Image 1 (cartoon, helix red, strand yellow):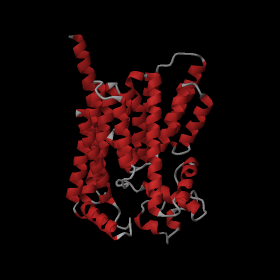
Image 2 (cartoon, rainbow, N blue to C red):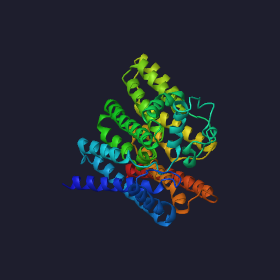
Image 3 (cartoon, helix red, strand yellow):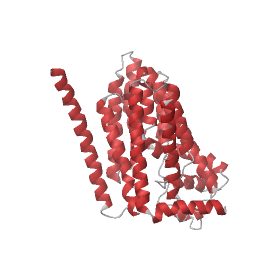
Image 4 (cartoon, rainbow, N blue to C red):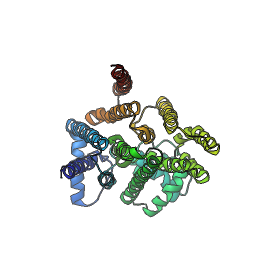
Amino acid sequence: MKTKVLVFAYLVVLVCLFLYSFTQIDLSLTFSKNAFAASLVKSFQHIGYFNRPLSGALYLGLIITLFSFYGLFLYLVHKKKLQKKIVWSLLIGATAILAFSYNAFSYDLFNYIFDAKIITHYQQNPYEHKALDYAGDPMLSFMRWTHRVYPYGPVWLGLTVPLSFLGLQLFVPTLFLFKIFMAAGFIGSLFFLGKILRKIAPEKELFGLVFFGLNPLVLIESLVSAHIDIVMVFFCLWSFYLLVKEKYVVSFILFFLSIGIKFATGFLLPIYLWLFMQQKKKKKVSWQRVILFSLGLLLSTVLIASLRSTFQPWYLVLVLAFASLLASKYYVFVPSIILSFGAMLTYVPYLFIGNWDPPIPQNLTTLYLTTCVIAVVGVVSIFFARRFNKGI
């Protein structure tokens, strides 16, 4: 009974996050022409845009509450007090609720939709044309980054153009088709994550699923903001599972499809080639070392992307997917939790103030550096504490 109450309470918090997301509907976006719905949207927008202290406080409260539940669920799984059925109920429930939220914290989903629209509606090449080339399009009134041409791999277009066709150039249906597609990528990622763990560390399957699937950062960036990264992760984990099973041809096909969505997974190519050679030679593979090297390579992609422009929380989704394969190790667990929480604080200044003007960028840089220092200190402290306890 206590578990059911806990699950219910958690789902209520997710419903609150779902509702909060609609406070961030862009003021230039007409979400519905129905009078009642339009009035409801305006009441939500009033909180998000005209009562920013309340909006910021609500977000901060939601984040703290979600991380509190996250820690509790991890503890219960660690103590083997959470059954597999309950874990999957939580994951599917979270997906069902947040798949229909508004992409509150990022405008990237609109760019994905418009990139496909350039092909389906304008019959032109998004690698050569940008949103600003279509000045009369109503979507431009609520988009950002309209000056850039398509920056992703061709596979993403192959996946999203059919969604654009199915949306019939109607914005809201197309928006939710894209959101449902991202949700499918999230569930698919969890499915193959579980299968990988059953092969390399079966006793850690549930812990890994909770570690990744209920991480507030992963939920928000994959299901609420609906970033492309979760589909890239899905193909990468599917590929990695087949690599573990030594099904190389399909594994490499899926791996290159992942790279063809967004190029970050390309950094794992050395790992794939090394594993292929080790398995062909029938040598025993240390999966702990493989995952650690993979994490090192993936963290380098986050660093490169952050230095090129600025750090964004969704850069961590791919890293956390592989971290979940080794989440029971304190030197993976501790920094993952600290960095995830710190990254989710990124949105607090904007929600309170309404812009990203100085000194916010400088303050965020300080936040990220402080978070990294805390993570390192936490790991080092645990390391020496364990050594000290062994010496007693």
